[in-house]
Amino acid sequence: MYATTRSDNKQGRIVPGPIDVICGRGKKSKDHAGNARFHSTIRKHKDAYRAANTKDEKKMISLTALQELRSRSSSGDEPSRFLKLTSNDEWVDIGDNAAREKISQALREAINQRPPPVRPKKAARKIDEEKVERLLNAQ
Image (cartoon, rainbow, N blue to C red; front, side, top):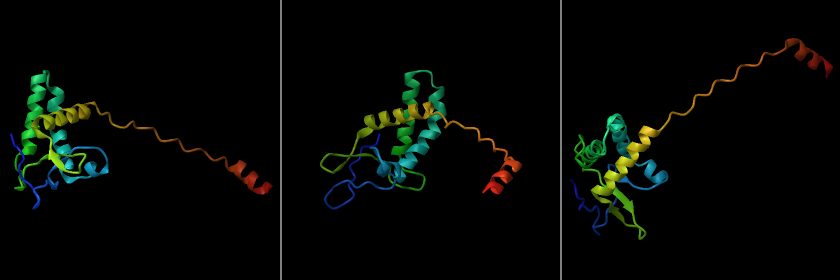
């Protein structure tokens, strides 16, 4: 697969790029462009994952998604890295095994997601014209 060795600055530290997947919770990872590509890839493979009958089939689907993300994009961008922020504020690539697990978890969550319930609209109340008129005249 793809092992990340590229660094993005003079100190050799990794800096997340727009195509990298940021592992973690919160707005920073949710809004990151690379995570949007990640979720798009998950949606693309969700139906195949749902239809898979064995663990081996599901593993192959998650590996295919990983290869897709780890390969150069059609626009020629660098391959995606799966980055996690360490306790000493350095970004590290989590590696292919952890990335595949992340993909598998996202696929499981995607196939178990239910659409939000559709609530019926409240019926408009009929206005009793006579009652309104009486109340207005009583004042």
